[in-house]
Image (cartoon, rainbow, N blue to C red; front, top):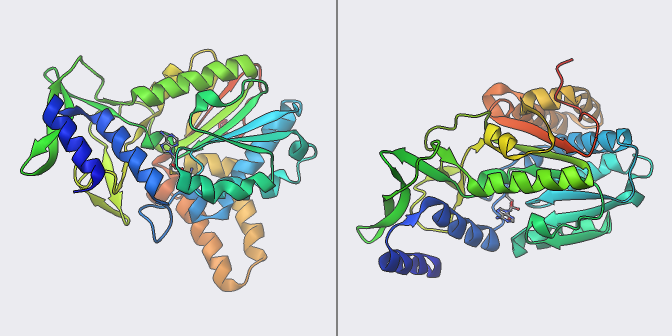
Length: 336
Ligand code: SAH
């Protein structure tokens, strides 16, 4: 039994079943602190790791919005959970061509994992960079442009099961197993931490100006059932086995995040496919394809398909933006 498993077992023995969100928080904190989970050799793969096109489109989105907002300087570019830093490295290629952006930009990375902070370290050569444990620590002295890709899905959820009971984790047969606790009624599945974060981001945007782009897998409301999943080496495993050894995530309820984000304008959600196509990903892919030899060119087009096709990441993943302080409408949300 790992040290974390022993600690959690002792806690449950002393206090009874643990609420699901407490379990998820403890497991994921350990998981991300000790692993680089991304890529083919890891446990799961994310859009920036699928194709350079993803980060490039986000770079274009940021540059366009910043220019239309009147090129405020300084501007704080914030990323929540940067993983290997791939999205921003790809975005920087486009942002380097936006006049004035490099001088204006200060980067704030909200990252809990020391392993992943090390993988992000080279971003400090592009823009002046600070790392923070929590969003609340990001300075409040300039407009923000915030990006969060596959961050909210890692935040702890609660699940109301009906009959005044909610999901918990207990001990059974020498291991951990699903259990229940009495609860106040809930809407099915929800993330108190995700909603509190959306509210905190909205508060800052209203005060400081700026925009936030949230991309994740999930739905525009009505995440009724259990979408908790555990991934190890690209396969589903039991979320109550081997705590801290696999990635725990759950579908994001965008309608609940939008409802929590008061005092700002909400754009979308659009599907990831719609969003990227409106930003011009197909033309960009064609340009990149032509610069490559046939084998690599085929890879570029396969990456495009994976990002935008409904059967792949194009429909389950959604993009939603928040804007505050009179910032303009961001690209990618209005049907043209
Ligand atoms: N955005 C990246 C990585 C996604 S994985 C990509 O798309 O590839 C989730 C990221 O969020 C990791 O960097 C992880 O360390 C970070 N993370 C997860 N939960 C966190 C928390 N509660 N506080 C800070 N960082 C967290």
